[in-house]
Image 1 (cartoon, rainbow, N blue to C red):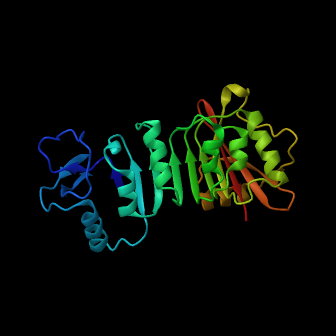
Image 2 (image 1 turned 30 degrees about the vertical axis):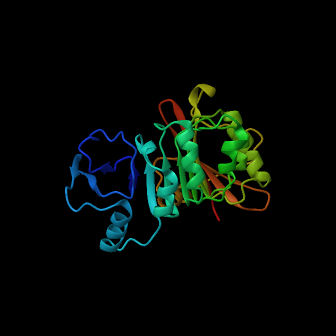
Image 3 (image 1 turned 135 degrees about the vertical axis):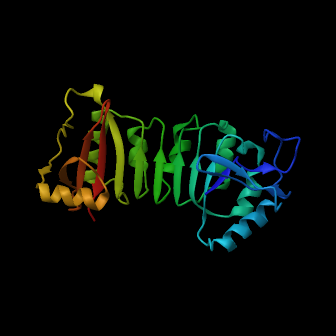
Length: 259
């Protein structure tokens, strides 16, 4: 996992890592082990040679996983993209400015898995351009609408901001009619202040109760714990389960499509 923002120049005048970072210059490697930060003094290699060295030593051939933290503004994103190439996981954390956030998304635009902890765009259609991409996984940690949910074209989706029971019911009805054809699983939560009990009332949705053996098999196959569930079916016959877990303030929901 490469963490943009964790690299330090071999420069005694830049102890806080605030100066612009030139990835063509030699740097010392820094890493954390057992909550202790370790900085090597030798060898000093530029970023490209460090990547080659690590990939050679550890036989790393798959695309990299990359996280952008506070401090990554020091890097030229175009140069990073040219050096790293395509990435597998792209983690975006909210300490950066909106401009820097957008700049990263512009260059690293073909990850397999995209994690966004906030929305840097003012216009809904801009963030929706990412929802319609065919990622393997997308996680979104900000407010989202029903339209956002319906535009998602990823296989696995995780939304962390709570929604209303009405919005969830509306989505399920659209899914039954054929929306989100690539979807394999979606996790989200419903604000418990939106209803009295810890039960999702699927108004207007036909569902079937499941045997305990069937529930147990789903829990084991998808690594779920202590979840109740019911089965639904879309118009083309594809079955899915809605699994629920009653939390303190939110009802956690997992929609799992059974292909």
